[in-house]
Length: 392
View (cartoon, rainbow, N blue to C red):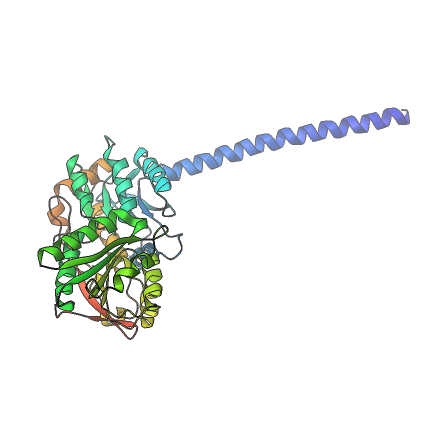
């Protein structure tokens, strides 16, 4: 054989080997992919409970604390799944929406269209929960919904308007919070001149609660001298001129919002000669508030839907709410057949029987799904810890 022919043969052989390797690789890849798809489909075909929260956000600790509590309850029970009355395993999946209105709508659409999603626990605030509700309400096969954090009073009224009965709210609604704040204002402010600041980023929570507090203060003879939203487009400093007016000078401040803007608000007022009592709503129930409150010279109070033990006074959080959410979901699944329809019927027709005494307090559900037995507790922040305040 000539050398030139030998070289051609070697090149051809290499080419054929390369083509053969590519074909074999493709076949193996297809087999592996098909196997993976089968494995994935097997696990994804199992019924599951979706926990929809926003844990990957900056300066918003409530959902993180909630998940810590939820996972702590799982570990305490030694179970990584729920069990139906037939002892079928119901998996638990976590869904992240990054505190995004667009993302939470996409996720709730996905969960709603997957019949294996038999229950949703979520979301991180009232604004996102309202979006979730809009998606679920539009379905003919509505997913049962446990609302562990959102407190906007209109949420369950909206669900009720379309006969969406498979909904439970764990926290007492904001009407109870505004009642407690009005009584506290009456105690702290002789003339009841009040400044109320809301949060631009969570308007479903802030605006409704802000207006409810303002209405109740006015009905008791008080005056709202400042009523503003603060956030990305508006600052506390825009209302500073009213603080220099003796006739309009507030006697007490109420901040209605979440901790991110609450801490910014605290920084701003601490730089000025302001020392009137300040009341934070439950959206600011995070440990970072306690560590920053010392810069403010006035008295500070915070509302909580959870009753704390002595050991919690330095580290208040929504952890107990997360633990109770696991307990409630476990109870619901255990009484059902582990299907969406079964869970939906169980919640719709047995709300009265789902009450219990949890780590955060008592839960007793009305026919509309409200926690009728839940209350708001008032704590004064002193020396970097909470102290129960009952004299109001």
